[in-house]
Structure formats: structure tokens, C-alpha cells
Length: 62
Image (cartoon, rainbow, N blue to C red; front, side, top):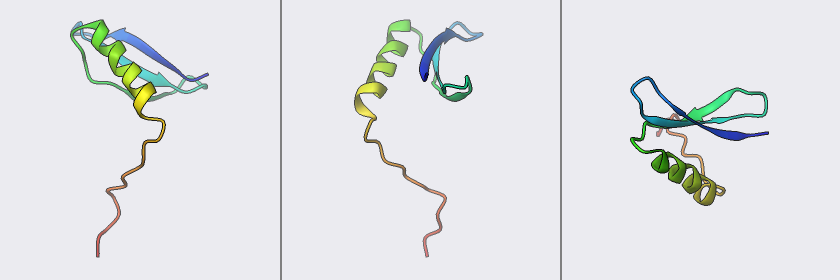
């Protein structure tokens, strides 16, 4: 099961990470001073990203 985890980093900021079903972290967030901000970012991803495209900036332009 995929899940978001909210945690506090060493400096006391709230961060979140997105974990795959096998427990591996797929991505993590920037730090937020308020837990509500981290939670809002998660909700924004859930709402706005289902149709996100991939912008591959590693391809050479000739």
C-alpha cells in the first residue's frame, strides 16, 4: 500500500515522504514550519497530480 508519512526532521521542521508498498521512499518534501502546511501539500498532490505529465529535460535538442 502506498502512503504518505509526516515526520519532524532534526531541525524541527515538518516533512513528508511518499512510500511504495515495499516500504521504499519514492520522494520526500521540503521542510515546513507548520504541520498543517505539510498536510496541505499532501492534499494538493492528491488532488492536482493524477494527470501530471513527465518533462524529461535530459534529452538533447538538436
